[in-house]
Length: 283
Image 1 (cartoon, rainbow, N blue to C red):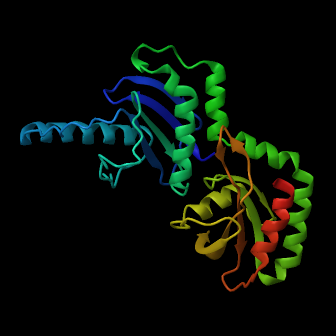
Image 2 (image 1 turned 120 degrees about the vertical axis):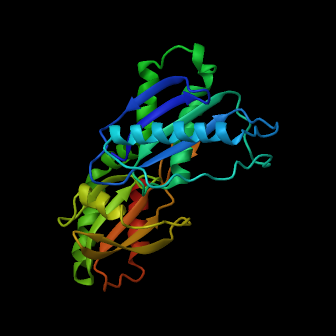
Image 3 (image 1 turned 180 degrees about the horizontal axis):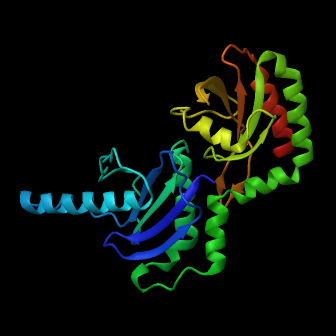
């Protein structure tokens, strides 16, 4: 599980909906991601006097630290980005909705944003204004869970479990002497779905991804490799973008294939070979 909690509020602080998927793990860093679906206000910025600004900052910091203590975490950095007012591609949303979610830090932010946008468009937007809206229904919450946990992507793999297992085991046998020790399939935001091989578990994969660093944009059927660590052991992680996957309400969600190998390994064009074979089954 890579999403731990999701909250829907208004920009005036009205707490509309909160979904706790799983308790946050201890001993690891988490991201609290913010997504703004509020109506674009083209008016001038409000300039506060120094005293009011200080009081606002004090309230913010106090609330954040209290929240962090409640989940046994500490805050070290809060990043503020330009508001991009007047941007040509800025969507002018009709309400005042803010959505936050606690996630693993290694998730691809653009993909997470697309998931949250899908939740907003399919479940939240029809309920605006939220301060007078009915509660989220069970079937709507089920839809939110399906989106966050990639149920369609997981079901497709389950449907082809036998073929994928056979391919993965054959590849691991073929490439073991070249340093390949594990294969993983993830969702389009890098949430791990399943792992093949005896050396690494799904928990190991999560630990590896937490130390992998930034993943750039990758074109379909191309790959990059990154250094990571597991139990102080250095490994290479090949990240392959499949180019195949489910389409959910118009959102294409391609799988990623991960290869875990020795640092001195050389896999050549093998990542492309694996992607082509997996794609024949999952495409």
